[in-house]
Image (cartoon, rainbow, N blue to C red):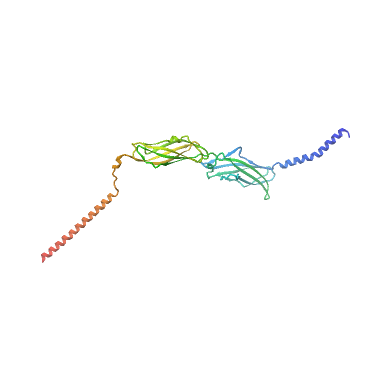
Length: 321
């Protein structure tokens, strides 16, 4: 066989046997190409921080899409849940059954909400995994399933609370007493006490001392700290009930919170012992005494009148005899 014919024969033989394998490989690739796809419409790069509605309720939403490249409608059963390893009370609302028309791409919404105050109980550094499963249904049979997931976190929330308690001491004019302040961090992260201030109502000679000890103090979340302050009254302060307000500001959210309490200032002057307090019962006692005396006098006058009449009748009868 001439060399040229031999070469052509080898090439033809190779093509004859290699072509079926090439076609089969291409056919397999075409089968593996997904005919529909589910994915996140909302950008989920990194961790998605949930939004708050008001001061403590979570209210947010994210979207996912379904692309149907088929020439027929696509019916899917959707299941969305939090990772079972975490006990997460955040509620999810979505369409459990969806249908996407042929050669169409549709977007669907997941409503995320919580009214239990969960944002205050969980650290913003702890992420939560959301799992979405889309299962294709045809003739009431599951055909194929696709899954996607995303990471979420609660936002940072801040809340400082302040309370006060008396130590049972009596505040005399010219002296001072101690009060205890309790500052609690109800947020889900650290917070700092700012702008401790006081105001005194109705008592210009009463002052609050020692608030500087709580200025710029950092508090861990879910913790309470105690601080002692002193309340002083000058010697010229008269006896009076004073209303005292202690307020602080949260460095996290800038909100101001206060505690209000009343304290009695007792005068230590000796003149107070000489005060005469009138009795409310004296007028009624005097009235009752006067009434009794009047009734007695009236009764005596009536008795004397009867004696005089009897005496006159007796005298007249003796005269006739």
